[in-house]
Image (cartoon, rainbow, N blue to C red; front, top):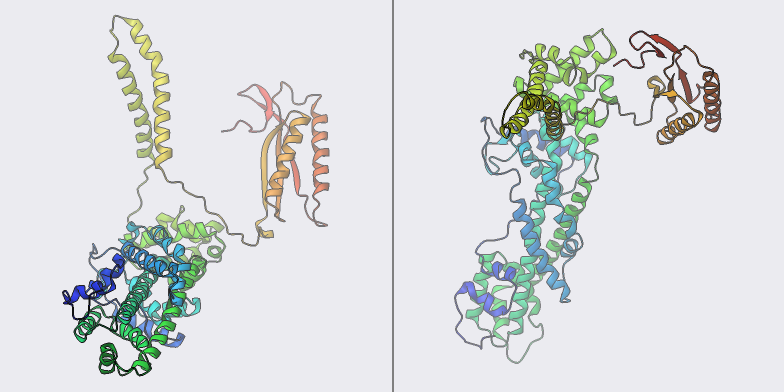
Length: 591
């Protein structure tokens, strides 16, 4: 500590010199010339005020219609925010470990920092960077180039103090779409966008908490040196704290260090404070109010970050999507599984981009085709026209070119790849041979078959690794299989011995135990082994034993009175097969 009257260095270094040994984080704050950014916090809105704000925000947001949007990345300084949060966390944790007082907001950060660090991975998984390219971007400042949903999430977080309420959020989005409709991609990006904005807000709060702690530490250091500090020193500190935006926090803590009793000699610090800080009690009250507000905001951010991962966003997004509400007019759409609905909506988004028409128009075309259909039930579903055989009919209604049939091209590509691979292997083998006559030709002829097998295995492996799995459409059946959707699970097999029949019925029982559905039946579809005659003397005994074991199984797992038995045996007699010249199960070898 320099002696009284000792010359100080430059004003930017004065605070650091007086503090002595400080952390790099605190040193950066004291030497900075800019203030911490204010929290994302504005006037709190109720539902009706939010609806008005949603409509006015939709009118104010101008979308950039350029084909290739340009601007900052979708993740505005997310990694920078996390790094800043880690630095603030280290500063607060150091204070906590030393036994000094930390504010309630800082305690929230200390206790939940593991949740904060997990956000980066969840943000990356929530919206891949390639997904960003198709989101409508804002044209006007201050969020130019960022997705439109970023501005929507920012407004929502600001006017709720970072609280997520599904009813308010839904009302806000519905009101916004009265003026400007959001795409499905934007709606599905909202959960991740909320994480990004909340992380930005938490970074600002953490900066404010840590900077306030540094200002209070400086005030304590000055209070310890009150006996020999000069007005010149204090003026320089005051200028420095003003540049850092920490003057009020510094003065508040400094005022609390000033002795209240009258001394024989009044220290320069007391006189300086009387001139520059006449409203000490008001500063203390303001500081306490700010701490309460900071504690509330940080607790809201942490709670909402946790809640975002727990909410079923399908139930929140689907009701506010106009295209999905149109598809809901088809009863079958609500019965589809979540994965199947996602396949349908992705196909609808793709078709909307190809046709350059709103998704709502595509959805209306699908509903019109399905409701007008008099064909099989499958033609009255959305999936038939978006991911099924009715895609060309929908494309015709949307005035899009008919999708080319590529089966022949794919077949030629498949067989050509195998032939080329086999030819390369034969060429490599022949390259090392010295042709002297027909034995070498015979060798290459015999090598052609294993070479084609090797080439086919390589092609199959490449296809298996590169092609995407296409999931079959399925029903949700959230409450189990309904009576109208009764299902029969069948295991095709042959009756050959009592032991094999017992093993098959045990397998059938395991299927039931894994799928205890009231309206599901489980059956063995059996044939006799191939024979030279239509019947054998062992047939009757095998069938009788199978029926007896089946009856025992049904007795073990009874059904309601009057209901069909749970386990069945469907048996087919032998029929003459002309090509095999044998008696065997009807069409058992078909295909």
